[in-house]
Length: 218
Image (cartoon, rainbow, N blue to C red; front, side):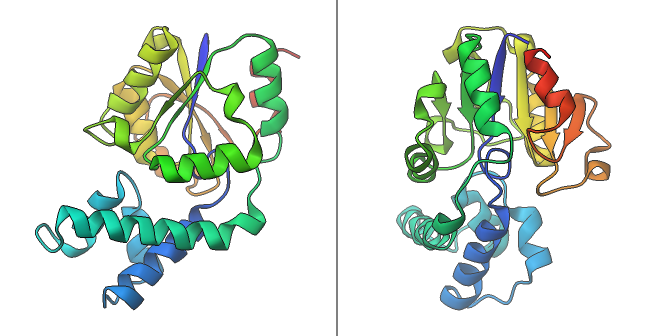
């Protein structure tokens, strides 16, 4: 592969439980819902505004209200997760080796810039990435291919030359719709949840996985 594209949450950092907690607090304590963990977890994909619509229906909130609620949820998530913020095992070394080999890398995430900046700047890894595609940069969320196709354009590589790292089925589906293969980090979902996806090359617990390390040579 000529280029790597990384999802962020659950792929580079193991933070999805903190996002679920943030959503549960917002949906139930602030907005008066009565949702369970198992009801919320599968809905956490795409833009935050889309999550609110899926949970409460269209027309419940104005665009301005959804923007405010989205930011409120992310502030709570960041406050709780910051003491545990760390890259997945092996990822720091993987990024450095890929960078030294001149492999172009991008982030393609449904996160808002507020959350992407939170990770890149606190971990001092922004310099590894030639392109960042956030929720604010696309019209259509994953599984639409827009996020990954835009990242490929910004990296100046063909989509078929990109390898995507993802952790959720909708993200892997977006890669498949982009003509890209994927490696799945099993931080959030297990292998049997991806059985419909034909583009998965490998499942890994983290970046210390031998298959993943060998992508950069032995």
